[in-house]
Length: 255
Ligand code: XMP
Image 1 (cartoon, rainbow, N blue to C red):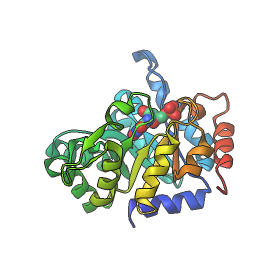
Image 2 (image 1 turned 60 degrees about the vertical axis):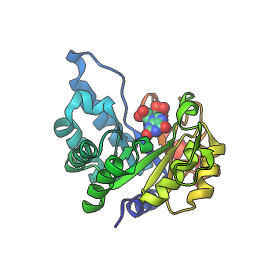
Image 3 (image 1 turned 90 degrees about the vertical axis):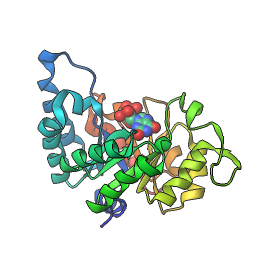
Image 4 (image 1 turned 180 degrees about the vertical axis):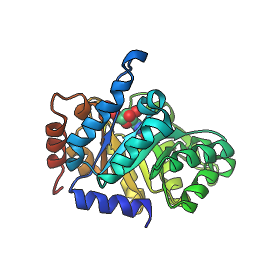
């Protein structure tokens, strides 16, 4: 079963399109062991309302990939969810392949990668290893922060057609051509979610971060075509993470 199908099934069985961004603020050395316990507690509280968990450097740096993070990934998968590593893989092909191999060895179901590096000797080796191990690759297409317009929003000349196009339109087309399992388009730019949806249909899923803390609205993003919402601080920093996750989950049911 492909990662995309596994996500479909997890979302159906959990009745949720929420991907939890399990991010915590910086902690000084003497407090770092508390991060692992906090992560376990948040997962225990919110797992009924989410279908997947996205891990970022917030956890791999203080806990280590094969120490704390691998144990959290086991907990995540044991609770019927999938685990996504937000590595934003962005290097030469050989390095990208090895980054993927380590995260897949730690149990991750998919990694996020940056299409700016291109295909040949860029992301192709990462896609090859992900297909071989039956895991997924999700491509950045239009990020959720304001400065995204400087790169993802720029007008470019398509190297194949010679025509002017927008960078994120080109990335959405590459996601189809390269067989990506998903793309990331910010919930802060719902018009761009709709444009990307026109290109991808249901062939490639749209993941939207930026709900809550960055100003995006869950319902608007889903109405524009987002399949999954990635949410961190709105849930994790809440006094009641389970309630925050349940409210978000319910707000996008039946759209
Ligand atoms: P918040 O707290 O803003 O967390 O809900 C969002 C999480 O998602 C990451 N993020 C992104 N990841 N493409 C990505 O791959 C994006 O456009 C993007 N925007 C935010 C962010 O680092 C945090 O982990």
